[in-house]
Image (tube, rainbow over all chains, first blue to last red):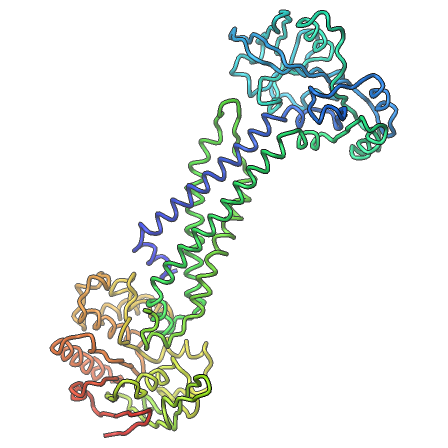
Length: 373
Length: 226
């Protein structure tokens, strides 16, 4: 401790710069974790946070709700599949609409036939729709003219929808999203295109029968027809086109950070170990156990990583509460804990190269001047 | 009866280099009294530093026995030698002598930190030593802020911090001019004698020998007493 703290206090700039550099990297890691999760939630939050345990698409839809069409034949096959309990229709349309502020904007309307098979799982404000023309909005869009009690007018038909409830993280495709009853969804579609007739459902929400798990239902429904593509709720969210690519891109970035941080820390400690090799040899010669010198080095690594992490966290915390465009950022507690442990391990691990060098110091070099070479 | 500070008997040090063996120390026998100062004089490569390193527990002998202050260290392993160096000997090396990121006082206190951890008694001893060495006003200076002579005095203070049985000085004046070298030797003698501590001063400068009680010559690893 004596040596570790004295050295750090005498080389504040050197250690300070490394700490700040690590802090900036930590900030970027945590911020991008929030950005990744916020981005994915805004893309597929409506799927992940709805009530249906299983969603059934048509294969042609390629796991995009709006691209999927469930014909009556397919619907019947799903209803007849083993292990299926209840089935409810879900429809999705993207409309132009005038929000409460009078601005014309795009809005995604999701219609569910059964509340337990397609409505938001939990409301943070208000209630579920009870009569025609009522909707649940996303709390993320509340400040953008989609707040509780506000009325949205679908254009050009003029169909009015009033928001009576709000749910967290139920956006689809990073835009304003409304959940309505299936009847309202049909009326909205018809108001825009009166000659279109009743639209077919896009996907089906399925609840397993008692004692049957969602995975079994998925297998059973997919066995009914090669035109059916059943997925559990989380798989449906994760396998929406684009999600895996976004996640993979961020993972590459995180991997790079995971390489940069130990490289920066490891090189720093290796350089200063080389620079002070004379002093370390002297200390070994006058009776410093090698383990004591290694402990001092590792303590410095822990302090630097911990201080860097604290700086990164201090920068991240206020920003993590903000909204970035249409994306709501959140403080990612799990990421904060996981990265803290990971970076500590990487930081210590990278300084072990220096520790190995310290362990190799032969005190005889103090008498030959070899430490200075 | 007082134990000798150093008792080396028939000590050999052989280095194996490829297919050859190099004898650095050849059947060296040397006894240093409890408060005796010995000048170890010899040309470069004669085995002076090897002898000091073995006496100080930095190097192990190939053959023979070594006792410092009555403690037999011949068969000590690395760990025991490290503890021995912490407690029984003091070193003043030729090249690197001070830890650059510790000030003068801390360079003395580090000896206590690595070993006994006495706390206040050690701090008092460090202050007393710095005072005796004329460095009281330089206690908070880093090595980079000290002159060559001041650095050497701090190194002497550090060598005395653990109240050793034996202090080993390896060419302590080689980096100093003649006048400063003499001052340092006077200081070494007075500090050793006032404490009753034994010392071996390795040198190739015959002028240094006048500050020592006895001179021992070494040539090709063989000791020849005057």
